[in-house]
Image (cartoon, rainbow, N blue to C red):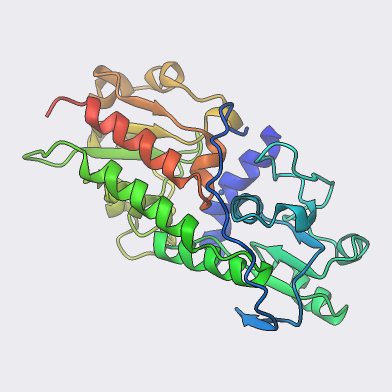
Length: 306
């Protein structure tokens, strides 16, 4: 799975330029709303005459959402990167190299994907298979919209999940101590020093914690699509107060490997040991576990003396 996680990080940094290990402790998902049964429905360009009973998910985020809203029993196959919650019907289907014939062999009445790679939407549509495209969310509201649309398409309203997650995030942010000056941070997608600016989904989430992103000036004109590749000199000069590592599992990065980088021992985050290891998967998805990401961030921020 490490190779897949590295690929997912590259999707954030590389695919965006051209136009992201399950947690050991799995929280109990919120109680799902009862199926609405309101069909036919049309959402996101997809029309379903009846509730889908054979769903194929080629998006780890969508897989998490489907199970969180109670549509898990309808999911018959997921891609090789979907690893949460435990027990999902993992197959060798790929969201990075989707194969229409292999997908069709699952006899799906709904396919959910995150990227229209190699014309897969057209290929599946030609086979009369409904496809819902749920690309990487650009904001929390955008993620919530996708959850609600998946709820409508599956007959399991997602309003309760949206409310629960939104409320938890609001509380985590509200409980942070007030500071005279905002803390700065560097968010690492990979040891190649790709990062995410405040214009991205994850950057916006961290911004809610009152943090200033040191990567923002590196993509001021949005040429990198919010995912610039930084360099050692830039980061040493930026001197962030906090470093968040989203490349722990994929790339074996840690506080020790960061501290060993040339010149990084002068950084405030390194000297004060404010290097935060994140769960790679949680950090790269926009499903219900965004709460875990925000909690990891707010916990780290709260530990820095005001």
